[in-house]
Length: 88
Image (cartoon, rainbow, N blue to C red):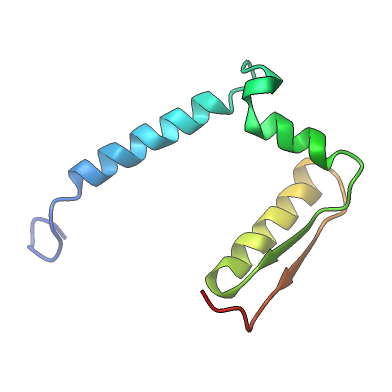
């Protein structure tokens, strides 16, 4: 698309995205201590709780995905709800 002139050069955006994803991966790595790892901290907070994830508009499918991730990976009950009237 870029070579055809339909979009501008997205190279810098892709480089930035790759760097952000690398940083997040390093922050959430299994070897990062709990005190410094937001994923582990969230897991501790959710232990023995019932997660209910809410989403509105285009984020409703993100809420559904989180729900299935809890169900499949944590083997725990979880629910999601859509807030159709919520506007950004």
